Image (tube, rainbow, N blue to C red; front, side):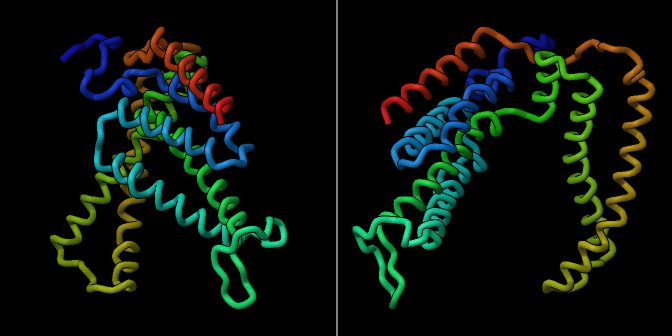
Length: 261
């Protein structure tokens, strides 16, 4: 195991894991902002294809990523598109092609185009956000903000401590559930039994959370957290030339897509 903080990420994991979090945030940000003002269907489709290509090439395919890309996002596009098509005021769109007619209500093709254009913009923005969101951890983002943007380390490392609370809570909740099973406190089946079980988890989980927060506070005090204006870094998240190249290439591809579409 390498102890070099600048060690390269394993090649098999994908190039996105080895990029600086700020670079992965800055690259799609202009396109995400400009997509808000787009009204056609082709532009968001082009950016969805770009985001999918980067995610499929730059990340290791996991079950979570596969479900997001091939189930969740298409479902969001269809459901939101249909919903917005129905909610679009027929008086505000051309009465050209009739898609569906029920009694006195008519769904026109222009309303469907408006609804799905809006849905595709939303999906494109989400897909671009996944480039950074799926390949970046919260602690690495906080370290990058401290090291590159000079965010006060009191804010950054407090955020890291907060990120580490989440898996801790999950572990303690699992232990509480196991303890309830050992005591036979299942409470039966049905929605009311589930509510009663969750109510039984709240108090021990809050007590464990308070104990963990006290231990974290004591550990930070013991390390003189906040006593000095700067601190040394154990884990470095540098901004390399490849991060700049990724940002420039992404901006260039985004500009080309906007010009072409």
